[in-house]
Image 1 (cartoon, rainbow, N blue to C red):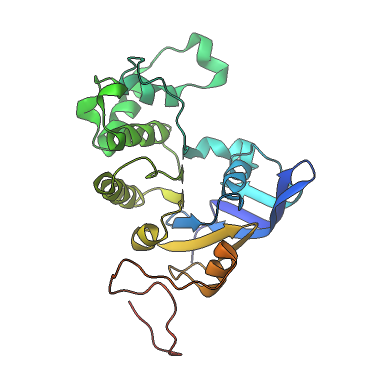
Image 2 (cartoon, one colour):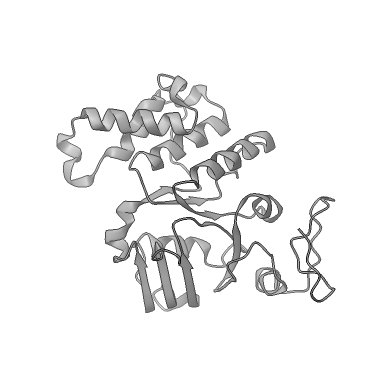
Length: 259
C-alpha cells in the first residue's frame, strides 16, 4: 500500500484575475516519486509551481502539501527556480549561498548560525559533491557547479519534496547528465518534481512523466502518450529520441511492449 500523497491536487482551476491558466487539474505525488512534467511555454507549468508553493490561490478545487494547506506545507519543499538572481561580480561564497536556505523571515534580523545550521549546510554540500568548494566564490564556479550549489540551498532545509524548474537549462550536456545522476540519488529519500522542456532527457531519468498545457495529462507511468503530445504540441507529432533504441511512445502493436 502506498503512503499518503505528499502533494494532492483535485479538480483545480487557477490563474490570475480573470485569466484562467490551469483547468480541472488532478494529480497525486508520493514520497518515492520522481515526476517529470513537460509542456509548452505559457502552458501553466510555472503557475502550477506557484500553486504548490502557496503563492497562487486556486479559483476552484483543492490542493494539499504534506496534508496541509500549501502555505503551511511549503516548509517541506526545497525549491530550485529556473532563474537565479545573482550579481556575478559580487564575491559571495558557496557556503553563504547555501546558508541562505536556513534563514526564515521571522528570524532574519537576529539570525545566528547554530551548530545544527552548520551541520545542515555541510550535509547539503556533501550530498551534491560541493563541500570541497565551500570557500569558493560563486563567480569561480562553472554553470553546473553553481546549479549544484542552488540544489544544496534547497536541500539545507531537509525537505521531503524537491521542486525544480528547468534545472539543466543553463548547463552543458555533461553537466546535465551529472545533475540528473545526482537527482536520481537524492530520490532515494526525497520526492522530486521536475519541470523541463528536455523531453528525451527526462524520459531517460525520471520515473513517471506528465504534460501540462492548461490541463494536466498524467498516467503515473514513464510512457509519453499520444494524449500528452496532443496537448503539448496541439498537432500530430512523431517522437524521435536521437536514434536511441528504446521507445517512450506506446507500440502500434496492441499488447506488445517495449522496454
